[in-house]
Every structure is written in C-alpha cells, then in structure tokens.
Length: 159
Length: 154
Image (cartoon, rainbow over all chains, first blue to last red; front, side, top):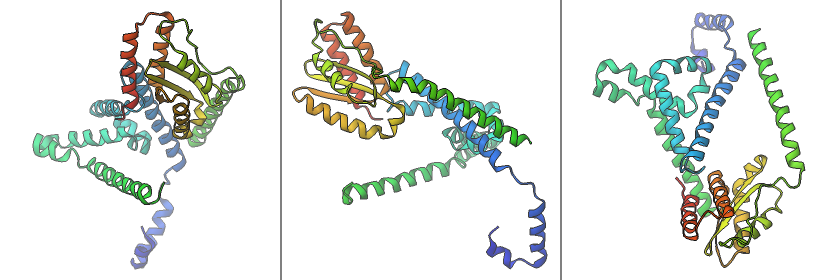
C-alpha cells in the first residue's frame, strides 16, 4: 500500500499493518526469478527448435519462420492448457510461463474453459478474450507509439 | 536451504556450460582456414567464376564463417554466416557487405543474404553444379526461386 494512504488510516489499522508485514511469509524472489528464467528459457528453446525445423524442412526463411513458430507454440499451449498440464507449469514458473507467447494461448483457453457453462456465444465467445484482450490492445498501442517515434526520427531526425 | 541448493546447482550448471563453450569455440577462431567454402571448378558447363571471385573477396573478412554463392549470367546470389558473437552487428555487416559486393559486380545483379535458409539452399545447389547433375534451365529456375526467398519479408 502507498505511504500516503497509510497516513490516513486510524492508528489501530496502522499498528495492524506493521504487525502483519512483520509476520507475513516473504516470497522467495530470487528462487522465483531462477525458476522463471529456467522455464522461460526452456520455452524459448522449444521455440527455437521449432523454427529450425521449419527452416530445414519447409520453405521458410529465418524472416518468415517466425509466424508459423508462434502459431505452433500457441497451439501446443492450448492443448496443454486443455489437458491441465500448463496450469502446473504456470504454478511452478510464474512469469516464466506467462510472459512468452505461450502465456497468451493459456490466457485465451483458460478463460474459454472457465465460461463454458454459460453457453458457446455468451459464455465462451464473449469471455474468451477478457484476459487476452489487454495484451492485444497494449500490443497494438505500443507498436503504434514505437512506429510513431521511428517515423519522427527518420523523417525529421535524419537517422 | 532448498533455495540455496537450487542456486548452487544453477551456478554449477552455468559454469559447466561456460567451460564447454570456451573449449569448442577457441580452436575454430584461431585457425585461419575455418571458413566453409567450396570453389566450384571452372570446367563446368555453367560458368561460376563470378561466385568464385565473390567467395575469394569475402573470405578476407574475419567475421565470416561460411560462404555459399551461385550465379547465372544475370544474377549472383551470395549467402554468408557470421560468428555468433558478431550477430549483434548483423544488420550493419549485411549492409556493408552488400554495398561492397554491388560495387565489385556492377554488370550483374547481386542478391546478398545472411539467412540460414538461403545458405542451405545455395549449398545444395553448389553440390548439384559440382556433380554436373543440373541443367542450365533448371539452375535459372532455382536461382529465381531463391531470389524470391531472399526478398520475402513476412
């Protein structure tokens, strides 16, 4: 909680806050970071292997192999989420499994499974992208900002 | 205690990997003839002197580890691979070398690439030319296909 808000609290509540922060179980940040690093790296390794397979066996170059790789990874994650395996990976690795593109697939499918009982249109259809929607919105928004900055730099900055 | 063990295992793991990399990486850098290239003999029915010349020029660059080049009468397609540590400068290196090659071969169309796929395709094509198992028409067709691959963006 921010310090400004804490000052407005009654003294009892402040005392409780201090008491609680002393007793609470500290999350092992370093250990979590290592787990996220290892599993995140493992996911990227799998992605690299898939890319290499596409380059060697199909008519894709390094430039073009990215799209089918992303599609494959998301497809694999969707299957794993459906079978309940990805939840366990997520529990273990945290951000390591959420930040790569596989986290996006997981967010879509887990929301779809959750709202299945509400029907296919109003349940699955409307809620499928509630978690993944922000990813798309801010992905598009930030790429717009970056493109805008690049355009300014190239057009008027002479870069 | 568990966290300590994890960190120790992890650091030992990293340490071992670091060692292994150093041992394999050292000799290839020290040897001068580490560049993978095969010059195609000139008595073939399809003249490959332009690509041989390009290989000669490019082999003077230290950062290059593999070169493949094939040419027809109109087009010269070159693909290179560079040292992994130099890949941060990949775009710059590609730009410089493309310019150099275009200056060297003014009367022929030059396609320059650092893509792994192009390298593989050209290697296959070189082998076919070397063994004489490819006709001129087929070669032109293949070169056209590879040129298209070089230009593909998405």
